[in-house]
Every structure is written in structure tokens, then in C-alpha cells.
Amino acid sequence: MNGGIRFFRTIQVKLIIIYVLLILIAMQLIGVYFISTMKTSLTSTFTNNLNEQANLLAQIAAQTLSNQPEKPGNPDDQTREEYLGVLVSNLFSINEAEIQVMDGGGKVLATSSQSHASYIGKKNTSLAVSRALQGIRDIEEEIIDEDGQRKKIIAQPVVYSDKVVGAVYLVASMKDLYRTVDRINRIFMSGMLFALGLTGLLGILLAHTITNPIKALTRQAAGVAEGRFDQQVPVLGDDEIGRLSEVFNNMTSRLRDALSANEEEKEKLASILANMSDGVVAADERGYVIISNRRAREMLRRDDCEGIRLSELFGMDEAQLTALPQGTEHPAVIYHVQAEGEEDELMRVTLTPIHRREHGISGTIAVLQDITEQERLEQSRREFVANVSHELRTPLTTIKSYAEALDEGAMDERELGQRFVGVIRNETERMIRLVTDLLHLSRLDSNQAPLRRQQTNVPEMLEEVADRFSFQMRKKSIRASVRVEDAISTVWLDRDQIDQVLDNLVSNAIKYTLDGGRIEIAARRQEPSSIAISVKDTGIGIPKRDLGRIFDRFYRVDKARSRNMGGTGLGLSIAREIVKAHGGTIALDSELNEGTTVTVVLPLIAGGETS
Image (cartoon, rainbow, N blue to C red; front, side, top):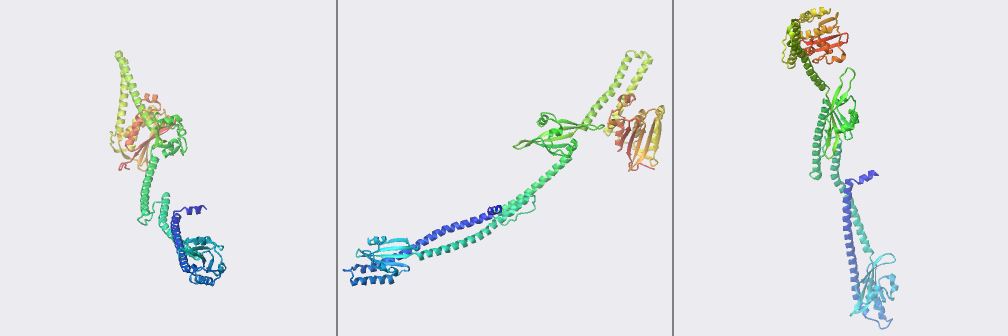
């Protein structure tokens, strides 16, 4: 049923119906006018013919009817009736028509119908005859008899010398006339049906010329809606539909280019979002997350953020979330507490409202920035300034105090004065070492300490390091050993700076190794093209929580003890920078109360090793 309804709603059917209705209405109007005119013409001709016959008969019968008999039954009367009977039967015979001639009294003198011969001698009392006998001409009537046939009545007066002497009465059947009209109607209807059929056929052909391009446009539009832009609508002419096809093809091409550009932009945006170092989270106007990039999920430790409220995601209350996009509050900071031994993470959250034209704020963009490293560097900078200030203030305070004591009279006592001068000297040397280390670090940071590589015998270098600290190790009964693989002989490196690294490592090992301990200095080949020099001790070790910051400047595990031992807190930092300048790495592995191993890996430059 619905299919049939849709069929009749198609443009093709509508066009055919319009064509057929137009032709039908036109032919109906023409038919009504034509048949009406034709019927009027036929009826008028038929009536005029009857009137002419009646007038002619009246003229002929006027002389006969003017001779009135003197006595009834006169032989002349019979002769007159016979004459009139022959006249109406032969001369004025009309097919399926009856002609009567009456005298001035309305008595029927003659009739052309043999079936009505009994009417002769009787008076015709019809209204038309009565009016004709009164001298009224051109009396016409149409009647329908008992058989349902339509007949025409003509009554004409017979006048002789301006005197009505009788009347002529004609009753003619109009069956042939209406049969002719019906035949013409049937011919017209047949022609109209043929014309309608031909119109319908032509309408189908014409509708196809209009609807086929429209169907092609519809199919192409459906294909474009599904994402197929490779097809073109055929242009079948230079009419409106042809121009529409050209415009549609042009629109399809431009839409394809626009969507391609849009896809490229989306891919670029997706790639940018996926590879951003900052996390991005987008929420709708209700505060529910609709988009998040990979970095945001990593920072928030979530597999999926979609569908979660921002307040729940960031652990904030709604009031704070509402205030952040308005700029009334500074960006919020989120803390993520890590497991024991790991550094806590800090994230800065910046919220920005999404504005849509004529719709106000339709959502929120949250940008997450990992400020852990930034905060750590800032903390390191503050600690560095504080440490430098503290390291310089302590000896300066001591020098100032002892100088004031000397000025107040301690110089007068030679032994006390010499001791005070010795303290001042030691503190001054400590300050010099500190400033020297800082200057060295500064040169390394600014690449102002170029490497002076030379061929260096590794076994000899390690033996010399052990010899330089042999006195200190004997004082603490520490046993030292040097082990070098046979494959290692000479390498290219800056001997002075590597000596400084090794001196620092061995010095630290001696400081934090208890009496009777052991220190091992070793060198081994490490594939593919590097050597590893390690200093291993059996000292007190370093707690795991301090391993991550052991190479930071001024960082001390036991600050008071390290300072008392004369360290500046910059030795390992300088060692790391020197090793980095050589293109190598330095690593520290330690177990509390078991010992520490520091390994320096140095690359072998071309031609830098001989066997």
C-alpha cells in the first residue's frame, strides 16, 4: 500500500497525470463546444427544412382549402381530401414524419401516416394547431412520445387572401438527428481516448527525459552522502537540468576537496593531540569529558577518560572548576602521590572555555602540564643558591670570628694566634676549593673546558690513582686492588680530567668505607666500542631514596658528616659533567651497609686503542 502511494507521489506519475488531465480538460471543453454547436446546427437545419416543407405545403394547399364546400357531402369535398392526401403522401413525404392538413376549423383533411388514417375528419385539438389557426407562424415544439422518442412539431397556418383557411401540422422524429449526434459523440470519445493514450505514452517519454536526470542526481547525492565522490552525473543537455548536473558535479568536486582538506586537518589535529607533551581534555557544557589525548590518560593514570566529570577526573570541587575558566583563579596544581621511593608528580591544570557562535560557552578545554621536572629544577636552583650561600657563609663566619678574636688580642698569645691563623687558613682553602669547583662546573656547563685527548695507558692510570691514595687507605687499613682486562691497553682521553673523576670516586670510597674495608678499581671492555671503569667499595652505602639525586650539586646523603670530611658536595656533579663531555655515562649502584659501585663508561674513539 505504501509502495503504491509512493509510486503515485513520484514526479514521473505527476507529470503524466498533469499531461493527461490537461489534454482531457482541453478535449472536454472542445468537445462540449463542438458537439453543442454541431447539435444546434443539425437541429436548426432539421427545423428549417421542416418549416420550408410546411410553408411550401401551406402555399400549395391554400388554394385548395380556400374553396369551401357549400354543402357537406358534396363530391368536391372528396376530391379535395383525396388531392391533399396524395399531396402529403407523395410530394411531401418525409421519412418517419407525419404531415396533416387541416381546414380552418381544425378538422384533419389529410395525413401522411397510414396508421393515423382514422384521424381524417376528426379535429386536431393540439395547442400548436390552435395557435396556427389563430394566424401565429413558425410554431415549433419538441415532445417525447410514449416510446421515448424525441419528435419535432411544426405548425404553420394556411393563409389565402390574408385569411387563415387551414393549417399544416408536421410531427417529425428526431431519432436520426440524435443518432447522428451520438455517433459523432462516440467518434469524439474514441478520438479523445486515443489522444489520451497517446498523450500518456508521450507523457511517459517526456517524463523520462526529466526524471531520469533527476534520478541520476538523486543516486549521486546518495553516493555523496555515503562518501563516494568519484562518480559524475552525466550532462545530457544544455537545459536547466543539464546546468543543474554541471553545478552538482562542480559541487561534488569542491565538496571532495573540502572534505579531503578537512580530513587532513583532522589527522593533523589528531596527530598533534596524540604527540603533544601536554595532556589535553575536552568536556561538554555539562562538564563530561568527550575527548582526551594519550598524554592526558598517561598523566592521569587512566585507560579511558570519556564520560567522566572533570570534577571527578581532577579531584576538584565544582566551584573551583567554574572559577578556573573565568580567569578568577590561577591554574590549579594536581599532586599525584607515587609509590614509596618514587618522586611525586605535579601537574598544572589550565581550563579554557569553548565558545560557539550564537551559543555562548559550549564546553571546556583542560590542558595538563607536567611540572614535576620544572618544579624539581626550580627546587634544585633554590637549593643550589641556598647551598652556595651556606657553604660560603660558614667559612666566612668562621674567618670573621677568628679575625675579630685576633684583633681583640689573641695575636699577643703566640700559640693561640697561630692556631687561629691555621683555622683561618683552612677555611680560606675550603672556600678556594668551593669556588674552584664552581668555576670548573661553570666552564663545563658553558663548554669552555675543551678536552685535551691524549693516548693514555689505562693500567698505568689506575695504578697511579691507587698509589695517590695509598697513604690514606693504609691509615684506615683499607685493602685496594686494581684489575684491568688484558684487551685494554691505551685509550684516547683527557688524562687530567679523568684523573679528577677517579680521584673523586676513590676519595669518596675511602671516606665512606669503614676501617678494614676493601676498594676495587677495575677496567673492562664493553661492547661494542667502549670501556667501563668502576670503583667498588664495601662502605656504608647509600639509601635508595637518595640514589636519584646523588649527582645533584651540593646534594649530600649525610650533610653534617660530609661537610666535616671536607667535601664541597660538587665532586660527583663535576665527575658527571666530565664524563658527559667525553660522550660517556656514569652510574652508581649501592646497597645500604653493603657497599657502592660507581661505573664510568667511556667510548673508544677511532684509533684510540692499541693492543
